[in-house]
Length: 350
Ligand code: NAD
Image 1 (cartoon, rainbow, N blue to C red):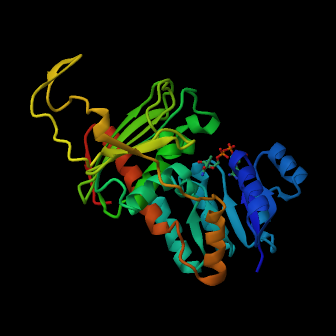
Image 2 (image 1 turned 90 degrees about the horizontal axis):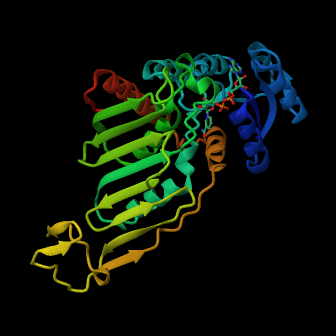
Image 3 (image 1 turned 180 degrees about the vertical axis):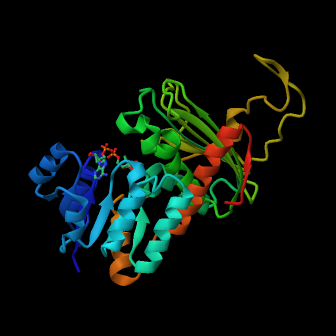
């Protein structure tokens, strides 16, 4: 069956959904859009969609079987519930809601209606993330004990509603949710404790830089960092295992895995004199004792997100981005705001 998609919120991301689905997903046709701004409706029309001027109108559109919600974050909950009550399957942009309690309301309606509901955590298909996932699955660095995941820009601006608290602005909601979702999907263990530090460097209402430190039940710790005002970025990923260290430097996925060469070299017993004076533990290794390997190769495609949704609806396949997983992520977001407010760590499990 070919499903027909209607998009609520035809802004930057709404238009991206339209074009991504149109060009790369078979079995799903984008037919309609609703936006509160007339100029975006005009664009939707120019792009060949039926432009609905109210929520009621798009939900009454009988041809539409699925809705994608791409409005600012504070509208997601009511729109998702209304769409499911109108009998539509729903894909909702991230962050799915303003807090975990709102998502619980959505999940109750999803259960009641039996429809498919999923959050658009498209960054589970990012190449940099899939490389880290593959490296851990293939045991290329031994047992991981620290993971650092960062995105750092230097624009210093939260555009439009992203700077407004009422709309769910700020970087913890915007990028934090992606990085947290990736880690919680990657690591099969609950988050037992976290500590968040939100900064308001150029904005007063919403965090524009933050750090989050998460401890998992299996002992692994993760450092998540999002900056909008950083001119000297650190690697996108650095993963420390008990056999090797992995770095993915950037979105172009430059990087390597570095380990000690198993050549029987005995590490110096005596003290080493460096530019910083004498040291044993921090002395640089000699080059011939180190082995550098390339990162694993991965194939990944963002359109697989929608292909999975269609497979769930048409064939009863397993949903990849499960609402229950999104609920755990929202609980971590709630706890991170709480930790920043209190200025101390907050305990799970989440
Ligand atoms: P945007 O401002 O470009 O677009 C939002 C659109 O929603 C606007 O055109 C606005 O007029 C419309 N709108 C506002 N309130 C509405 C309402 N009540 N009903 C209908 N339309 C309404 O914002 P954006 O960057 O496209 O972000 C939209 C959503 O997509 C956000 O939740 C954001 O977090 C998410 N997003 C996700 C990704 C991703 O990679 N998954 C990337 C960017 C944005």
